[in-house]
Image 1 (cartoon, rainbow, N blue to C red):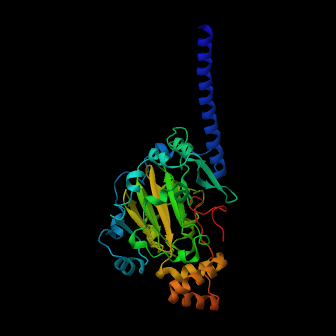
Image 2 (cartoon, one colour):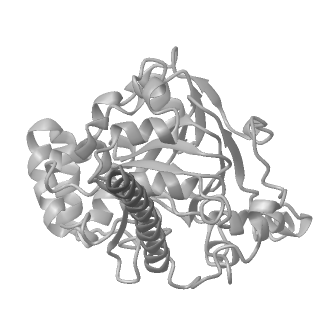
Image 3 (tube, helix red, strand yellow):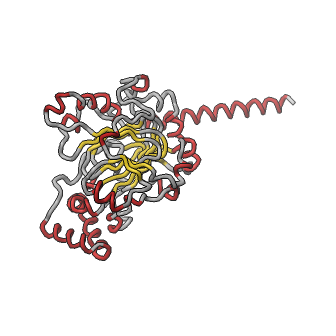
Length: 380
């Protein structure tokens, strides 16, 4: 009996050691991911104490800024109406009732629900290192991090999943369909293996988000929010001063809203001829349309799960093609071949631009590290 009791006691101790070892492994992985994703912060992840502050960027269900943009009903809005009145005019908008029939609206409702879907060995992209390579965490570790009072709940700007492969590799791509308003996807004619990354799953806690950026290649984007709340600030193309695009000491969305946003609300801002940013508050089941060339900052107000797609349509084809000719020359030629049969009108347009040597003024636009593609995901 004594031998059995001793054996049982040792087994219990072994289990305790194993749990402690798992905890130490988790801590090491979180620290390594944070160091790689934001080497500039070192150990100053909560230097501003944003988790304890009530800031002007707010939270919850309030949506005071949405009066400045169209708020549309996706259940009744036709593709032709959206294309002619919204997309053609490069007009941002908020769309409701587009996601009602998505299985994702029932199955992606929390971090725990996502954890039950994602394979245990899948490493989610939570940032990029200084060389542009993806920084990854298994979802079980990210889930724990996001609810950890010493990390995700405390960090000024927590790690944020922004992953272009996760939907396909986890099978989550079967849980939604592209809304009819965004069904024109011209880049698919370049071939799935050749086109740039275009869809991302976005998961993160309060204060995470993407700093100010413009989407690559002149594409437009739609962002569908499954759960949680987001705050957006959008600026029209060509209207943003350097102090907003590259503000000194501002390296996150939460910091931008704390430091830069108040500046844009002052009378002196408009006196200098600058437009005030469009203010969008997005809730569950709502979709934000970001037209080509619009600069934007996105802040998560609580734990959010969202899906975003970048796309090229007839309206922004010329701009996207001129960007692609510089930054993705091989793809641009393959794209023309694909358009020859599918869209001969655009094939002729692209062929003429190619013959004239037309290119975009900038081959690529600045973007936040959260949303920019890493070297292992983005190749021509």
